Each structure stands twice: as C-alpha cells, then as structure tokens.
Length: 208
Image (cartoon, helix red, strand yellow):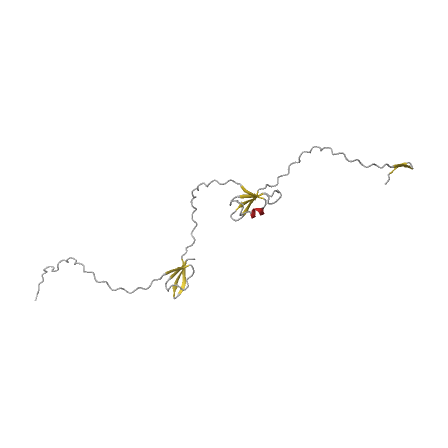
C-alpha cells in the first residue's frame, strides 16, 4: 500500500535560560597528612649524626653542601662562587677638614745619661709624645746629644742631634815671639888646663 509523508515543522522549542546555581555542597573529609619535606641544616663543620634522610646540610665555613641518604651524609657540591674580578678604583674621597695646629718642636727634659732617662720614665713628668735629650757633658760620649721620644711604655730613640765632624781648617798664622826667659843660674867654675910642649906640639892637659 502506498504512503505519503508531509513535514509539519520542528516541534523542539528554543533552549531555555540557565537555571539558578545550586547550593554549596558540604565540606569534604580532611585529607591524610603529607610526608615531611626535607630540611636545611647548617653548621661550621661537616655534618655527623644530625638530620634525617633527604635533609640537606650547609657548612658555612667553606660553603660545602651535603645531602643525607640511607643514614649517611654525602657532599653534593659547593655554593661558593669563584672570586670576582677586581672592582674599579673608587673616586677620591672629599678633602678632610684641616687639623688643629700642632705643638712646636721642643725638648721637654734633658737627662745626663740614658740610664737616668729610663729609670725616670714613670716619674719625670714628661708627657707621651714629648722629646727628651741626653747631655752627658762630653762630646766624645756616644750617648751625648741623642734625642728620644716618650712612648706609652718606654722612651724610643729617634736620632743623634750632634753634627758630624767638620773638615780640618787651614793652619793659623805664626804666633808672636814669646817674652825673653829669665836669666839662668851661674855656671860652675871652669877647670884651667895645663899646657905642655912636647916634640914641637902643644898639649892641653885637663885634670879628671
């Protein structure tokens, strides 16, 4: 038997608007505790028994790094970098303020010997930073004219202030004739010889 079809159009309407959001569901159960993470430990020497497997250790004296595994610490590296290049020279600093006027050079005390100076250090009244000089009264003495500076605990030799020996000067002019000396004593009486003529010769005979 023959049939006939006829399209009567779409029977599905357009999509409706989005529905209202539903209520928040209840909080889920608390999860299980996670495994402990690795820890960083530090010290000034290599690690020994501290820490657990997986931990890291930094030796701050040389910057070596260690990791612990199977109960043993093993060095894994070093975090200290190579020495950097020398930096550029800095700019000159600003000129400092002028200092106060210094005291003029002066001799605070004169000693007759080095021994006297050393024994008088604590009681001589000379201030630290002041000078003393040795005057033995003898220019040939090796300690004569030596200059010392008073320090915090003792005197310090500075220099010998005596000058070096000068060049020999030219010979001076001849001196004036001295005065006539006093008259000498009268001499003893002379002995008169006897004279004798022998064989045509004259002999003087002196008594002994």
